[in-house]
Each structure stands twice: as structure tokens, then as C-alpha cells.
Image (cartoon, rainbow, N blue to C red):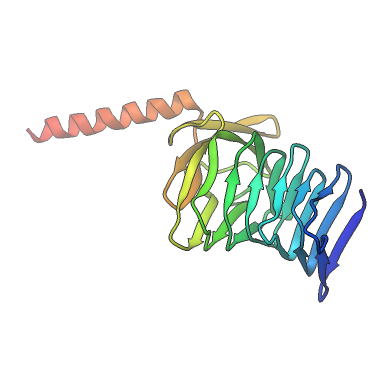
Length: 231
């Protein structure tokens, strides 16, 4: 347990030459603040990894454990296994980038996102080496609203910007596109519809579900009567 920081201009190597496994224990903090950090041993994270800016090279050694948190708006290069804990992209609102590696969720974990106005936290994958797998109901999505959303606004939460692999899996409690979840701002609940696409997972701000359903019914009736009027 302790603190390790790679500031701007610094390059640090963390691990054993023997490859012996290491742990960032609960309460421990590993930070890249404009610098570069290289993992030299398998690392199990039970504390905080804060990739504010700069790059963390995992060398395919990083596993996030039950109490671990990975956050920030820098870049993580190499394989990452999420066996638990929390992924929290952004410094306030920002983008956390995963590059040149596999991203696998194989245990119950949390994805926390902030939304404000027309923008939101985001995870971007660059050249993943395998399908980005968020698991089937293993990853729980939690939203924090910094302002009231406008109906119809689309938020791109997860995006693959390059490479030949897509996204697999769904969020916990949101097994199909069109499912809704809610978040509260100043005591008022707001609702969002999830959409699972090949290279993106998005949210759209929608009216509360009963109203949303009525809108769909109203639209269907409008189309029906317009067609009858043409006959």
C-alpha cells in the first residue's frame, strides 16, 4: 500500500524482473500524470489506478479486482481484465482510451459515467486485439448527471475508433437495445435508452418509459391513418 506517480516527462517501470505477481492493495494509488508507466509483472489492482493523462503500458498484466478502481482520461495500452471493481472514465467529463489490447469483463463490476449537457464520459478503444467483451450482464452502468439532459440527445459511451473487432455483451439489467435506465438530477428522474451497436454503445435521453411507449403508439397510429387517407 502506498503511492506511485509518473509525472510529465517521467518513465517508470513497476514490477519484478522475475515476473513475480504484485498487488496494488486497497488504499494504494498508482497515477500517471503526463508520464509513462510500464508494468513488468502481473498486477492485481485492489486500490486506485488513476490514469489522469499519459500512458500506462500493462504488458498484458493488469487485472482489476473487487475493490479496484481504474479511472482517468489518459491511455491504457495492452490487455486489461476486469474481474470486479469499478471503471470510471474521465477527469470530470473526459475520455479514457484503451489501445492495442484485449478488454475482458469476467466478473461483476461497475462502469460509472458522468453526463452533462450534450457530453458524457467515454471509453474509446483503439485497435483492440480481440472482441471488446463487457460480459453478459456482468457490468453495471451507473450514471451521474451534472445537468438536466435534453430529450433526444445521444451519448456515445463506448466507441471503437479503429481496428477490425467489435463489441460483445450487454450491461446488467439492460439485455437488449431499447431497454431504459434512469438517473436523477436535482431530485428529478431522467431516463435513457441503451443501444448496442457493432462498434458503439450509446444512450439516448428519452421521456419516462410510459410516455416513451405512448409516443411509439402515437407514431404508429399516425402512420396508420396517413396510409388509410391515401387509399
